[in-house]
Image 1 (tube, rainbow, N blue to C red):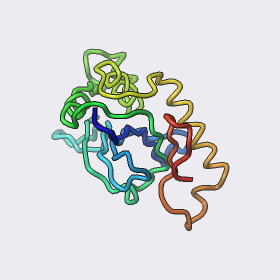
Image 2: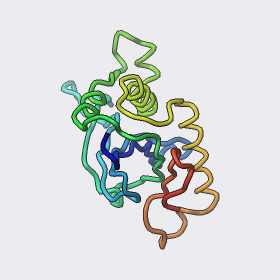
Image 3: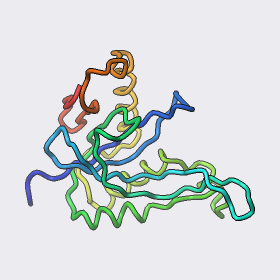
Image 4: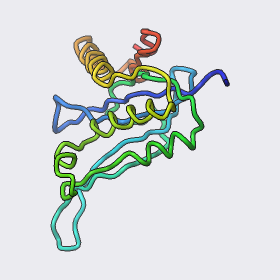
Length: 179
């Protein structure tokens, strides 16, 4: 099995209009840390004008290559696993994670769907199909990620403009890779 497997990160972004919550995304980056580039996978909704002149916010899946330093509002990265499958397999699994809309037949799933439920479903599915090795318990991953962001807030991490890089915690090793 090849060494230096890519890493799966949970990425947390600030939401200026909702300061007590975060936008969640998944990043795939090289093992070498701190990473400068990543492939970002996430569910997002954007305001759109409908053909009837109204407004809608449909959810959609997005995969894009990003320069980590240029990601606006990215607060922290948390390494949650090693990718042990081909990139094409990983992409296929993530593209297949269901995206629900408010008018879907599965009303319960539609009501509770957001970027967080998508990230949880994605990590769960990646474990089930043996695409990643690492932490499998979503609640533990989310709790540790939120604790990390809160700790960084208390330390004033984003109050200083001189700090470089995105704070990164590796849950596999228990080490902070970027303060």
